[in-house]
Image 1 (cartoon, rainbow, N blue to C red):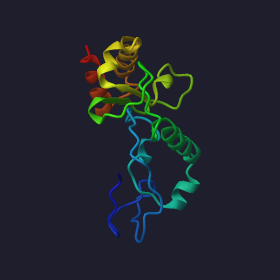
Image 2 (cartoon, rainbow, N blue to C red):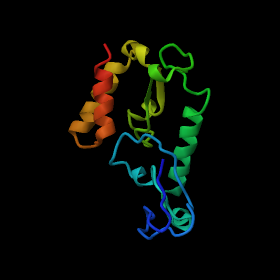
Image 3 (cartoon, helix red, strand yellow):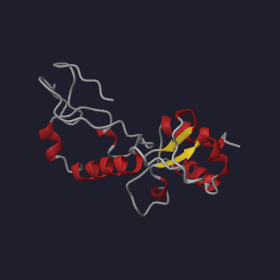
Length: 156
């Protein structure tokens, strides 16, 4: 969640202080790739007029819509067993990886698992291979990516 301090917080797009109210705020969507061009919007505050004139606005709104559709209440279905994940201690999710529909990573956006079922996911090794290959080529990077690879690899 973005932290807003009146008169101190700055717009991530123009760099100017936001003086009176939060004019636009974006949910804390897990963007795995810190290099993604939408990463600047996540968990931040911005002037509404800055967002309105930004060329990435439609992509951002599409991402938010996709996130709500795939992660909202009743939509956290385990990919392995198809049951809803309701126990937060047995929950594992893959956030947003890419908006490029041609990328092999696209189909892995916003997946949900019972953590105990992750070891049984048939595509686990293929997914890990894709992530490590993309990371070694410098196409993706970030602390969330490193954590995701490590956490999935440790599910045996």
